[in-house]
Amino acid sequence: MKITSARVIVCCPGRNFVTLKIETHEGLTGLGDATLNGRELAVAAYLTEHLIPCLIGRDAHRIEDLWQLLYKGAYWRRGPVTMSAIAAVDTALWDIKAKAANLPLYQLLGGKSRSGVMVYGHANGRDIAQTLDEVLRLRDAGYRAVRAQSGVTGLDKVYGVGSGTVSYEPADADLPSVHDWDSEKYLRHTPQLFDAVRSAVGPELHLLHDVHHRLTPIEAARLGKSLEPFHLFWLEDATPAENQEAFRLIRQHTTIPLAVGEVFNTIWDCKELIQNQWIDYIRATVVHAGGITHLRRIADLAALYQVRTGCHGATDLSPVCMGAALHFDLWVPNFAIQEYMPHSDETDAVFPHAYTFADGMLHPGEVPGHGVEIDEALSARYPYRRAYLPLNRLQRDGTLWSW
Ligand code: CS2
Ligand code: MG
Image (cartoon, rainbow, N blue to C red; front, side, top):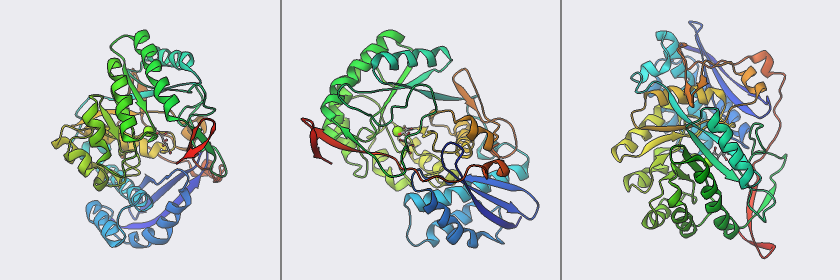
């Protein structure tokens, strides 16, 4: 089945998305997500200038072979731009293969390992009381797992804390904005948040928390120890993981389960983390980690060490990534949880999809392929708008202190 054309669609229905559409001579089409928050056009150009010319005329069924060709053929292997572009091709080809087989994609991976995909929702608040209200609202809406984040007394803005119930959007400015950060204030505040939440919800609800890479390893160890009484499902991105060994130090001090990997793009980013059992959950997902073909490899390595998957699922990953990830989640034997932040109505209208949410679970649906399409005419009404993620600078005693 020959690939006859491929093109990139960039749109901004509330936020930017980059989508690859591949067409075959049999008329079957496939979609892949290529969105890299804040660097969207780099991936779009990589696809248009460097990958699409290599695809035309190739057999769409040879997914593995094409993956190797694009990965090894780059010579400059890995990196988020390269791997998001390869992921888009890979996802679109899996979509086509499943449509050709007239099966939902999870069937091609090996079939269901569970009846649905447990997700965690997001509870955000400007203070502990508001976050607690949100946790209770999500629990009442059927969620079995909730991530709790709150504003910190004495800090103006805290990354990752959305405003109330509207869809969360961290890329908030035309140029990067800088937020002040104070680790000491955060380390004092966060155990109070989880004390309040755990006392209110009792032992059953799974609670999660994201540090967004803001602590040093020894600070992360202190946070982990201070949160142990509240039995979190996981503590995410406690420290940056460019240096994988940093997690050894955290592990030596605390039994809190650790999750990391939303920014990882290949198995090499987590090889030591997994093999040394320094983490419990791997957060890599389809779009930023080379597609289903590569994510499967990461999951298989993780399974050897009892590390489970917890795919990234923020709103800056398009519904195309979410659809593909849900098929992966339904199959992958060492699944733990899937992140879920509902997209805006505009985004859902541009990307009609088969996945559905009920009782704290997502289900990818039974439509052939990954079940997500794009309304191109509608997408054209939302042109790209440059948007950046903010960054944090450490302050102490009210003045800038360090990076
Ligand atoms: C977050 C993300 O979902 C998460 O766990 O860390 O919101 C992340 O900050 C964004 O995806 C960055 O683009
Ligand atoms: Mg995160």
